[in-house]
Image (tube, rainbow, N blue to C red; front, top):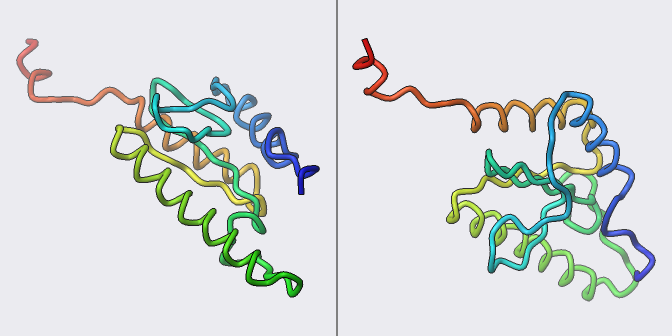
Length: 136
């Protein structure tokens, strides 16, 4: 297991290339919130969006997860712990004003990049408040 890449996986690199091609700029492998020991794969700081690229096996994809027959209880416990940690990460970031986006490794890179761009653009858009009418 120590040979499994946790950073710069093929899906992650392809997603970053697609985001860059869309003109988006970001940071990689950062902890969005100080004091929370969870590192996002792609971070859009000003928009407060953290993107996590999840592997189908390791994070228990509802469509593609496989359950090994050898040492089944160990793997079930491990994968379910990963799922709980992911949910905890999402809630901790949300409490700090961040939005977590999860991209499965089986997703189309283009559609994932478009979804991310849409969310980041929406969170970056200036809000129009009641004061905008008073500026005449």
